[in-house]
Image 1 (tube, rainbow, N blue to C red):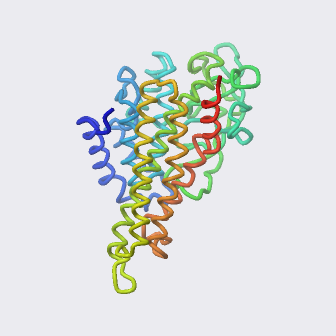
Image 2 (cartoon, rainbow, N blue to C red):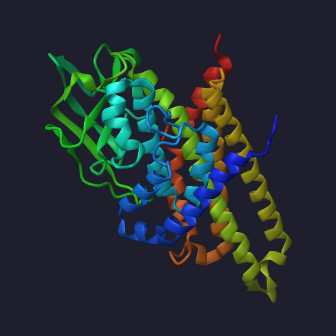
Length: 379
């Protein structure tokens, strides 16, 4: 058991850190205020391999493990959790096509996604199927050499901006076994998008409903076989949960660093507020919680990479614990800033707004408890 990063992992971490400080951190507040997706930064991230971190080398990706993936997203989110999370979702969708698709699909879809020439979205959630994802209603009916899709998806990151949509749709009976996975390309007749959602956070990335109205796609766009869609979706989410936890960890670490610097500088009652024991104890607790979250996340990433029997439960534990703890740490960092923490002049309030949704998406933290308890009580 080795708790140290190896030389390659440290180099990858440093590369992500440098990219963040140069291309993300200086502009994050601007993207948040203007509510714009930074296309040029995404393409620059693609040039470093950040568009296909754990996509296979055969598919045109980097072929890295989930450990390297969380290292990268932890660093990216120190600059902007919202932007990092969209890159994470793109990686998840791209990996699903690479892992479960065929050579033709890898050539048509994965190759341009790997470089971020194109961007991908993941379409599972529906207006009436959130936590109960297996009850989804979007349907795909076979018609000769095509499938015809009808239905809608809700809260889709990249909705309207992405070029590729990995869509879960029902081809069979009710329940998980009736769901299949498809690739739908932007511009396909019958594919449309709702208005951009007005959100509390995640302002740098677009979010919209994705709608299918007699949307006809080639049968060659079926990923895997009919009935495999739900399994594909859940395996994709194991990695997605690790990545979103890493985004929380990076955001909270940035908030903690800002708080440490602030309390050293801020003076009240004739001394720096860092000199008060109450402040020192608060910082000690925050640092301890961040370290515990980091260790749990890295261990879960190793299990998912190794295909361990308890990988899904480990990913759920990490997602639940890390996102909860990191939101609390960020909230504590805001409190240490006092009224200044509530102002947009400081990054804390933006980080807090961005991290709140991490406790909801990729499976709510209540559903993480369901996943964990089922693993504990099976057999």
